[in-house]
Image: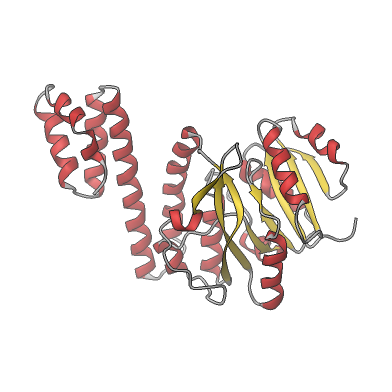
Length: 315
């Protein structure tokens, strides 16, 4: 095998079929100078890798549990000058390597080229919206615009599968191992705080599987709170810190309101009341206040609250 340019890093912790889809997407790359390093946490990857007989695909047994630890292990084995992380049930579009490599070649001072992504189902259907548009990005400044930490904290979401120069990856310390599902978010924040140059190529060059597992979403909510707590500590800029703390408060508000809705759906007035109270600590809102009052005044308030569950939608 010739020296790869891209080291694509993944961790397998479940069934083999999603890994097959990922490998197929990587083998379809129009830029062939890649290696795929698969860290196997589940014991299911060996037959899949053997099936292809492709010496660009390398397999390693997991040395520590968790996606972040597995990615770091894969990065330690990587020989390419560019790192790209992909979850085993996600994929890359055929021109991902070619397009991102072109940007890095044209801009030697750029450390990271992020891309957009689309959701896809098991049936192969894609979502009409992209990751960045779902995250609230309405205007794309283009690949010539360096992303700032302030923009990132304010909501310029970056998809985790990006082309990252290995030197920048190593200098930033790789993935955190205690923020499952948002490891990339925290890595990008650390890079921006360090002064790394991150650009966005606003093309849907990656794909993520939908719908998301509800259990994974719960882990995500908890992890993103921890991530934004750390992001607020990365900078001395009062405006950026204020934005990060405000974002953290909003995350806590929405999480509490979601849990309140879940509690109401099973007629648990006590739990619903506790969650609405937590939400009101983060941000006063009339509708949650009304529901909290109804749940506090009398048990009969539960029926009123249940009939008005839609009012728990954040405003």
